Length: 280
Image (cartoon, rainbow, N blue to C red; front, top):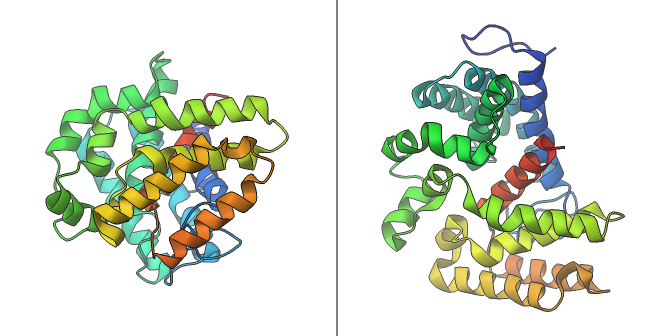
């Protein structure tokens, strides 16, 4: 059993299941290819500072903290407590990766969903984990401190976009309205190829989300290019096309050539997989 890292009593079996699943879904996102500009076991995408081994190590490092977040959610912890655990997770991540920010966005988003799942299971709440996040912690998410020099904060000021904070406070609409329905639709039609469903969900996110990583790297033109590329893939039939892997691979190569990486969409894909697995 993984040891507890917080001041909460040692995690229940349910909290351990919920937290461990979050780490598993980070690895499932990593195991998906081709994802435009993103790291996988095939290549490093548009990143020169990280690879699959580093991301896998980061995911393993974060599991005990996701367990703590699930346990905290189950006892009704306030946002201030969740934030404390999240900051501890971030310090552990940076120590494990030599200072590389591999999963800061995932700590925030998956952490909130893990806390919501802990609360949902404890009290058998019928609403989605996204709605639980919005209802219980939404106002505090919006009122919380801002990392002024983070990429997300810089982009928010420069382009007046909401980013992860607003997405979470609203209950993750990009997941529940876009990526999750797409994932399940392709899973039902192509049960033999779960990777295809993950790629399709990823493309649906790139096509619709104002990804702050894309804005930081490529500005509005980079974001527009990325969204147009993903839209063209989907309108052309997406993974239903016989040669979809070649087409998606070409988009991936084009993103790498332009140094574009939709890191926010990668986090949202992992969260989508998490929400889907929690419901099974």
